[in-house]
Every structure is written in structure tokens, then in C-alpha cells.
Amino acid sequence: MSGFGVFSVAGAEPRVGWRSGDEVVDLSALGERFRAGSLNPLMAEGPRAWADALGQACEHDGPRVRIDEATLHLPFEVADYVDFYSSLEHATNLGRLFRPDSEPLLPNWRRLPVGYHGRAGSVVVSGTDVVRPRGQLLEETGLPVYAPSRRLDLELELGFVVGVPSARGEPVPVDRFAEHVFGVVLVNDWSARDIQAWEYVPLGPFLGKSFLTSVSAWITPLALLEERRVEAPPQDPPPLPHLAGGRDWALDVELEVELNGATVSRGNARTLYWTMPQQLAHATSNGASIRTGDLMATGTISGPGRGSEGSLIELTRNGAEPLRLPGRPERTFLEDGDDVVLRARGGHLELGDVHGRVVPSA
Image 1 (spheres, rainbow, N blue to C red):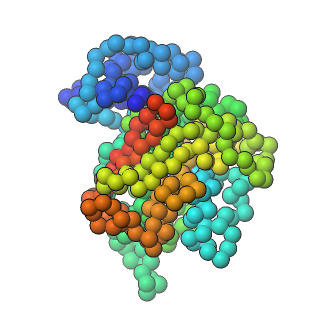
Image 2 (cartoon, rainbow, N blue to C red; image 1 turned 180 degrees about the horizontal axis):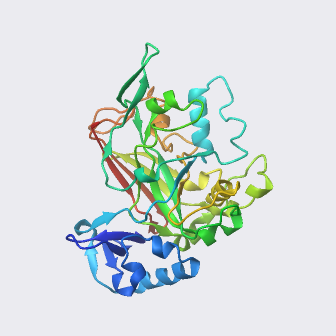
Image 3 (spheres, rainbow, N blue to C red; image 1 turned 90 degrees about the horizontal axis):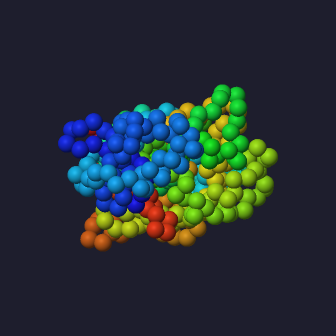
């Protein structure tokens, strides 16, 4: 496992480290950029500095700390957070669940990467407890109540982190993706399905999504993912010119969801219909600027077969087919005390995992 992160030991000030197996290599002796409590200063420097830092990190023989002896921090200061809806399989699965007598995909889905803006302040590092959110739920009576979510779900996603900002009014085309993006993280965008179901018409997700988003403690630099780049699935119809391209940016990364010690899903990120460069191009196509620390997530990644879905609502067919876990009660949605771990691997390269434990509503 490799990647840049931020750690501290025994109450000392946080500093930048490099994940090497089960250890963190302390990079603080290499300069000011590594003594910061965030990766934002390094990320803002751009591709040349990133390549230099990666070379230094891989070669540095500095002090090492065991992972279990270190405190891991959110590796970057989140400027903005956007979540997309880029998996054809996921969108189709949900469409069939919610609109069984209609086309599963809405007319715009194949034309643009659908997305919404989340809350930067609710992005947390892996290992942070997930407090069951409260919100309005629609009862069988047809009236809403304010109560803890009863349909708490996980969402298996990748995300990319922006390093170099852009100017307002200047879109970032797909072929300039690598000039702006520092690296990739694994993401769990926890979802309260019942809160979301009541609130999302007509404006989309709000309280059902904004309570927590977990990211890995380690950012994998784009350079380390070069060997995992493959061609994305064909797009039909062809996208408009400003979204064309970026099809060689699908990532052959194996994905896994573990619930209470049992693996319940295995998939691969290469199935995404809309690639990360297309997501960035769409997000800036109206002239919106990006900033150092912007996080953009892919949305739930699901595969074409049973057991490759990236959320419980799909795995259980909206609760109709509960998961049977070895030695544990079956599950439709998450219960208090449940442990969720997301993992990602591309060949010998492991991305940082994302762990969260559900605790009762406050």
C-alpha cells in the first residue's frame, strides 16, 4: 500500500508521511512542504513538484512508524465536495427499483455526468464513527416524522482530489485533467435512503447525504495509477464535443465491500461510464472554478453481475432480498454497531481502505 497522508504520534504536530506497507515513513525532514498538517501546500505546487515529491518519498529512508502507533488525519483540507452518478450499472439498478414501469435511465443520464454538491465540512477520515442521522421520514400514514434513519446505506466510490486551481470562467477540458488533479482516494458516501426519498423531489439529495462522507487516509498519486489505466466502456450516444475524450482514464482497480467481517460485494472501477476527466470537464464547463482541495467523487460504482453492487439498496433489492452474513443476523440496511470496510487494489498497488462503524443517533 502506498500513498501520501498526514499523521501524528504521541501528541506531536501532524506532518506528511508516505505509506509503505504497514508503516508510515516520516517525510518531514525533506522540507517545509512535508512539515505541514495538510497536503494542500504540496498539491497546489503542480505536476513537477508532485513528481519530485513522489521520487523523494519512494527513496527516503527516514524514521518509520507503525500504522497502529500513528494517528491518521484527514490528508487534505476539503475546499468543495461534488458527488457524481457515473456508473451505468448503478443508475440502471436504481431506475429499475424506483421506476419499474419506465425506462431506468432518465433522458439526460447518457448526455452528461449527473452530480450534486455535497458539504465539504462533513468529509472525514477513515475510522471516524458514523452517527446515525436524523431527518424527516415518510410514514405509512403518508405523513412525515422526524426520527433516526431506518435505511442507512453505504456507497462504494472513488474520488479525485484537485491540486492546481483553475480560473473562474475558464473550463478545464478533458485533456488537462492530469495538470490539475493530484491523486485518487477511496470514498464511502454514506446515504440515508429514507430521508433522501422524502426530500429529493424536485431538487435532489440534501440531508440524506450531507451528514457524513468518509475518505481514505491516503491519497494515491495519479502517477502510480498509470499502469492501471484502461479504455472505458463505449458511450452511446457520443458525448457533446466538450465532454468527448478521456476514455483512456478508466481505472482497472478491483473494489470490495466488507460488512461485519464478511465480503458482500466485489467489483471493478473500470466499468464506470463517465470517466474522471469527463467529470471534471463537466463540473467546470459552465465556467465554475476549482480550488486546491476540491474533492470530486464518482458516485456508487456497481458492476453488471449480482454481488458486484456498490450499495446495500442494490445488493438487497431495496430490502426485499436480505443479505445473509456468516454467524450474524441478516441485513437489509445498516444497523447500529455494524462495521463497514471498503477496499481497492490495482495489481500490487493498494489504495487506502475506508472504515466506518455505525453508532446510535445522537
